[in-house]
Image (tube, rainbow, N blue to C red; front, side, top):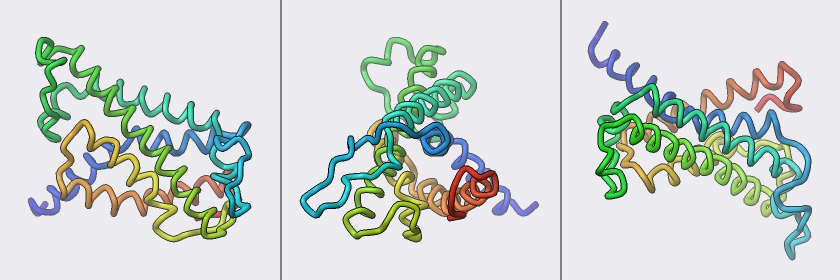
Length: 196
């Protein structure tokens, strides 16, 4: 295999692995959502809902918990790979436990929390923008629908790790196709009313 192709495949696989807490948080919020909306039914002066019924407390909490748990699990099984590949800084609070499983677990959990929280908040921001532009729930806004949660996750994760530009670009490209594929599967399974 051509080394450059192999490098692209490795980077793509790592991009998916890195974003797994965000991807699963976003999917979990949809799958396990329902109930009380995050905006508590409030509307702004424009008469339109703040977020809408699609963003719920239950989905938000479950999504963040699942994403954080995935991050913790990744921290346990990954060891120092995350630190080596993403150049995670060396905050003073962790210096005494450098290289131990505790450090890796804490880093994984924090990164999972950042990615999942960012994904959920990014998705909520997307809903907020859609409501302001009078886009009804379930109607598509190309690229924003696929990338709002990704941008949120990357912004939050960048607060605790340095994410290389080539990884960011790979994540964005892959996420568009993964999100569309996941939505098509959810539609075929009857979990979504639309395929996009």
